[in-house]
Image (tube, rainbow, N blue to C red; front, side, top):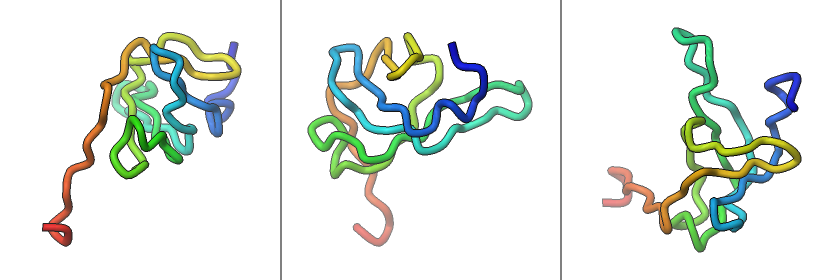
Length: 87
């Protein structure tokens, strides 16, 4: 069991199918609720996340936390919206 929120940094995140999604690089906090809102994931798997872009995952999607993070669910593919510069 984790004792500190900082222990989540650099943990690998896996989908419900056991596929590596990426690595936790930051934690998104909800200061109003004083809780973790989500995780900011970098070095993402390009087979699951378009262009291997960084993404955020809602904390409610997490099934288990230990040496890895296992998700309850994850989309088969995450498309990254285009920015104004790309249009």
